[in-house]
Image (cartoon, rainbow, N blue to C red; front, side):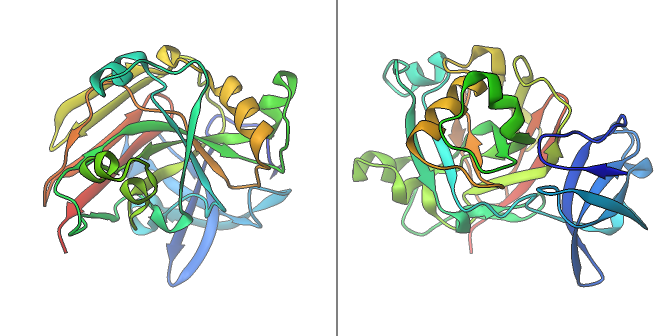
Length: 272
């Protein structure tokens, strides 16, 4: 069975993971009941999801592999203040034009990896977000072709050193620390991202709850806008903004971002 960028596999489950097992790294397709972790498996690909691929006979219980970031992006493009209530809790209004910023590729970590609290900051905060994963080279994408360039979606946490964001007057340091972009647990290629429930929990307590339909600028708008500025490469990630309710993280916290139809991304917070 074959798949490829922008072409969901022709079966029910289309969750594409990047994982390691027995010191080997591979992409694979996650199967089983999403509500029953014990039933879930991952079938390794021969190839990768950005080109035609085949599935191998290698099938592993999901619990026995280590999930990695589902992509290694050349760049992560963040969108600021894309939910009106979050813009207001930050003391402003949602901008008429999307506000972009960049997170380095070195900030990306996977499901289960640790968010590291830097010594330079005393106020590190979570921001649960929907991530768009680009599936092919894209430049000046028209609305009619947006779906063609999206491989799928993932959960993300745009971790931010809020005190440094205020003091620096720009966002590169505040959002660029190593481990400040948890991404995963996989890429879901079969979801309609226009109206999904997004929730963030810290130590099991609900902190954020919003719907992607509340975005000021939709996924389609963002892909068009970002691609009008810069060329998007396969594996690049667009973070679409966070709902209201952001808050501080402390040593030994556990933060989980869950998105309807995609899954849950969980990371421990550690002060080295």
